[in-house]
Each structure stands twice: as structure tokens, then as C-alpha cells.
Image 1 (spheres, rainbow, N blue to C red):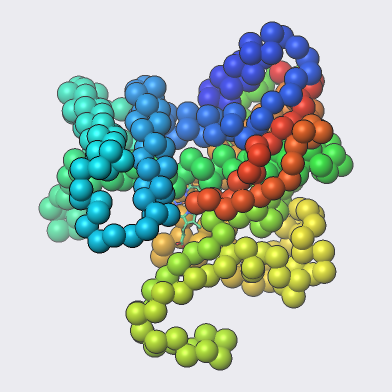
Image 2 (image 1 turned 120 degrees about the vertical axis):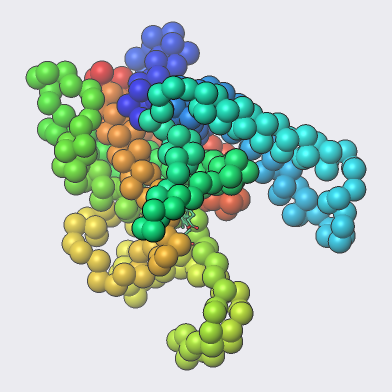
Length: 340
Ligand code: HEM
């Protein structure tokens, strides 16, 4: 994570020819960062190949949504139309590349320390037998982690930067905390696991960002038995949509200033478990919650330490929902280098 963030800084500064102050669409940059981090986590040293796979996955997502938003004709997806053929080609490209990486991992004498290698390891059952994922299952798992983890973290980080650019008092407080926690005298830019735990304000800021701009604004479930919810009878096998965004902006829960950015709310324990559910709830809660929090803390702390930032006059506030909640016109921010 640290390596990917440092690489991002290097790209920013090289691209801006060493200027101390520069403007850019940080939303795009943070997407590149989270793709880099998740690719390194899953594929280790083969992360460049991993990124190529993810680019193909992105193409596939857009092709998929193009078909979802067009008129539905049963069986149409099996016809060799131009778009369908492209979708099949992209899909085969993704699977073929992941299969090759699996084969390369299998051929290594020493196991790599990455998620791919973990997914390939057998699981020992209590009765001594072993289970192993099939290649196709591993391919699907890699795709899920990328889909579930890239957009969500990148968008949350983007909103955190936008909110701190607007709320300069919180930006200053957050930077002070980072400087205190990271040892200034030794020029230590690497965050240890212990120091991450000490970043209390950063955690509060990220939680408040997740409250205001939960990347997944609706969670869906299907009832497995008849139930009564808030006085309504819900029969078995009904699809129920849980509006995360509604709970997060409810003045009855958060007070009259529910729409205002105030990380202070998270200095106290929560009153109600379901009042704050950016990660979902129950057995299907986000599998990458801890990973995402570490990733976002590392990146935000490192950005705060190195740059002061404010919104550009070209920024237009327009959150939209397309899979996740993101800024429709990007996030143009002016950065000024202040540290290392
Ligand atoms: C800010 C970042 C993130 C947010 C807000 C988020 C949110 C969510 C939500 C709301 C769900 C659905 C939970 C439910 O249905 O109850 C979910 C599922 C999931 N997330 Fe995340 N996520 C984030 C980052 C990540 C990352 C970085 C990864 C992987 C590295 C990840 C992996 C997953 C997986 C695998 C699932 C499916 C779990 C299952 O169905 O059992 N997420 N996430």
C-alpha cells in the first residue's frame, strides 16, 4: 500500500514537472491507486499483468451494463452480435490471463505471499481431508475481489479528499494527528500497524465520509421466511432493498445536521448497530472491510503529510450512483507540496 502510494506521488510530481502547486482530477488518480494496491495484493510481483486483467474487467462491466440498460429479449445474449462477441472475447481474455498466472504460481518452488497463492492453497478439514478451489472458482474469486474492492475504496478516498478540501479545519487537525503519530524526527514515511491504530481522527473522518457517501447505497436481500418489518408483513422469497443512504442521512438517528460533515459524531460509540452500515450487516458483511480501512488510512495519512489541498473552482459537486456513488464530473483539487 505504501509502495503504491509513493509511486502515485512520484507520477504526480513527474507529470507536473516538479511544480509545488498543481491541479488534477484526484478521482482518476485514486482509481489507479486502488487498482494498483488490489492487484499487488492478489497477484504480488505479477501485479502489472493483474492490472491488465482488471482493465479487461472494466471493459466487461461497461459491456454488461450496456446490455442491462437495453431492451431485454430472452436468449439475445447468446446471439453472435458485435457486442456479444466482444463480451465473450474480453471474458476469455480475463480467464486465460488468470489461468496463466495460476500456472506460473504452481510452477514456483516457493509459495508467494499473495492472495492468489492463498486461494490456491488446500484447506484442511477437521476430519483430515482437504478441499481445494478449482481453477474456475479461483478465477471467479479474483474477479469478485477486484469488483468489490476497487471502486468502493477509490470513491471513499475521493470523497474524503473533497470533504477535507472543503472543511479546512478538519484537514489541519487530521494533518496534525498524522505528524504526531509518524515520527517526524526520523523522517519515517512508513506506517506501522501500531501507528495506524493511533490514527483516531483519520478513522473518524473515514467513517463520516462513509456515512455521507456510502459507495454501496442499497443492499439487497431475499427473505427466507415470513417476517414482519416495521408493521409490514413481508412474505417468504421477497426481494428487499435496504437503503443504506436513507439510514445514514436520517435526522432521527443523526440529528438535524445529518447532512453536514462532522466526524465528531464518531468519537462516541454508536447508539444503534444498523444506523451505520456502509459495509453491510450479517453473514454477508464486506469481506474486505479491514483491508479497505487499512488501505484508506495509509493513503489518506500519506497524502495529508505530503500535501495541503483545496477544491479547484472547476469542481462541480454532483454525486451520482452507477454501481457505486462517485463524482459525476470528477474531483478537481489543487495540491500544494508541504512535506515528503
Ligand atoms: C470503502 C470500501 C468498501 C466498502 C464501503 C464495501 C462495502 C461492501 C458492501 C456494502 C458489501 C455487501 C455486504 C452485504 O451484502 O451485507 C460488500 C461485500 C463484499 N466486499 Fe466490500 N466494500 C469495500 C471494500 C472492499 C475491498 C477492498 C474488498 C476486497 C479486497 C471487498 C470485498 C468484498 C467482498 C468479497 C464482498 C462479498 C462478501 C459476501 O458476499 O460474502 N470490499 N462490500
